[in-house]
Image (cartoon, rainbow, N blue to C red):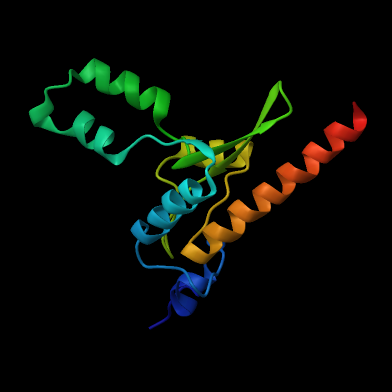
Length: 151
């Protein structure tokens, strides 16, 4: 029996999924690490809580279908968390972070397009979350120094 290339090499052979040796099988620990680390650093951020999505899509909540469509239209595709750091007195620097499991893919074409346009950072392990947030903070500090020296 002959198998395709991706089937022969497993998930590591797929083009769109970078290999992370510490990647987790579930998105939950990556999301938890992201939530805790952003809180620990004291950064401002935006995240639509899972409980909100549960409420919207729960038949018992009786949210009208047209409202569900409006909410999904606005929020579908956004990253799990967007972290913000102030840049001077006028601007804000943002980092979109989309937590994924070892084999996780984008949930829709819209999310995939937004990820490319907004340069989503995609951690697949708690260690990668820390690395991404630290790089973001380092980049922010570098930009702040440039703004201070330029003014």
